[in-house]
Image (cartoon, rainbow, N blue to C red; front, side, top):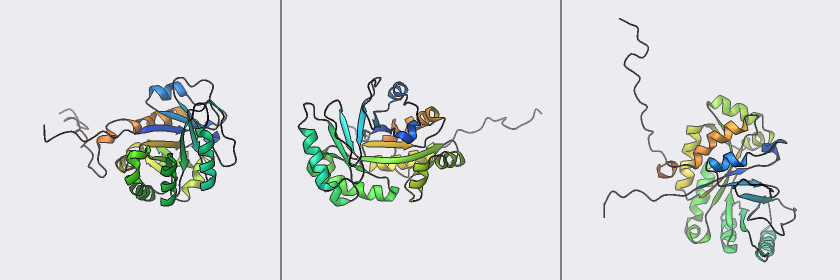
Length: 253
């Protein structure tokens, strides 16, 4: 057996959080998302036509639980521990029980989620805090079904473009006050995602900036779920750029 075996693949599922702010009265282009490798779209209602892309149902505190039709359910927000346990019990007795995930804020929340057999969802939070919580989850994660992160994100071809998109989105701008939004070029966002993948995150739930050019934004974000990100190491130097042509900028002799 070769001593230069490739590192193990780290599978990550890319999901779009398609709330009212992102949709803006429009619709999510599910078929292009599916073709670009996205794994799921998260909405507050089950879509009738999914174009082959799974749709997960988002359930905020106080909202009713589905009685059928939802393959995945995400219990969002500040549910009490007792409330989460009750919701999980009610969902598990459905004819077709959905896969369940729930927001958690800290170590005890992680322990409770894994104890219930649901996927914990971290964030939004600072990258360092997400990595610290992911490290706490490591002992239980392998046998308990993964780890998800809600990642508010504003990407642009330049930092200025990313910031401009951010400030046009009220929800994202409010979250940015705590420093919990990933903002910058695609390369900078890739660096953060590489760190999360290596920390054990298997499910990225991206809430992009609401913008008129959402299809272009989603096309850029598609790269965050593709190889070779899972094979890159945090902090590893980038490959050098190719040299300029010999006559670049020159003049005929």
